[in-house]
Length: 374
Ligand SMILES: Cc1ncc(COP(=O)(O)O)c(C=O)c1O
Image (tube, rainbow, N blue to C red; front, side, top):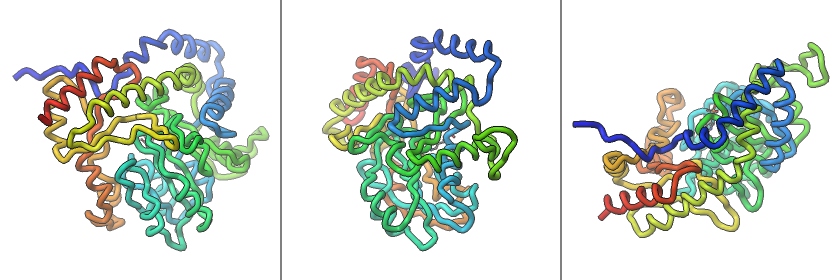
């Protein structure tokens, strides 16, 4: 049997490359010609431009979203013996960032509509050792932050937003990454804002936390100058080449986000009435950015196969929740302990989503899904 080619993939960067490839090449050439590759003018400009784009006072470029989480947690004072409440329905870096600091991730369940942290479950996971909570704006859906912020206030917890998938998403008029104490962004190539390799950023409104992250990312070196190392740090700096590329793409982020929302609206309207759960399209108080458009169906695998037969790619995020990963077996969190998370892992299916996806192709995805359920 000949394999059927996927002509509507889950994701492709080809359209983006066609749109901005020449500008990206010019930006790379500019850096090569300058001979400045580390913490130079591109980093400085990108830090200012990204902070402004996400409504935070400060942004510091780092070498990945994973590093951004680690540095943000470390700056917030998380260390050995502490507990940090995280969702289990996320990419594993949300939890490993806690573990590598010698602290313990404690998993809370998620809200069935948005698939983001459920504050009631967070409340039940609190202990005297809880130091921080990490809401993840998964798939670009803003987490309901107000109840978490009030829990954090009453229990003296740091709030670190995992914004790896939520560039420009807003919650009650505030951009994600500007709401908690710190935000951690990923610019992994497939993200809504993606570099040509690994990259990330930490955002904050707090000058003290900014200074700590700035030192941590650069071998503990004081910003003041010279070889004065004021803390034990890391080398998590963002390359000038990546910063220059990100500056080109940041100029398009609003338009690309609007295009993602248009695709989501076509899916939302076209899939209405089917026996699947659709993600919230947004409201006055919550404006998602659809890093992924993820539906849920108890016939997920059959639906994915059928779409594939019709040349349509899909993805499963995340087939195994973090608490059931072998890496966390030693924590002894049993299957069944996070029911909403576990059912989302069984049911979630992400449909093709990228800004250049045409209305006609989105319509073909809709029709194919509708035919499957007929
Ligand atoms: C929710 C979430 N957190 C953290 C990360 C880690 O980011 P990176 O791959 O840039 O290290 C990712 C991306 O893969 C992610 O999706």
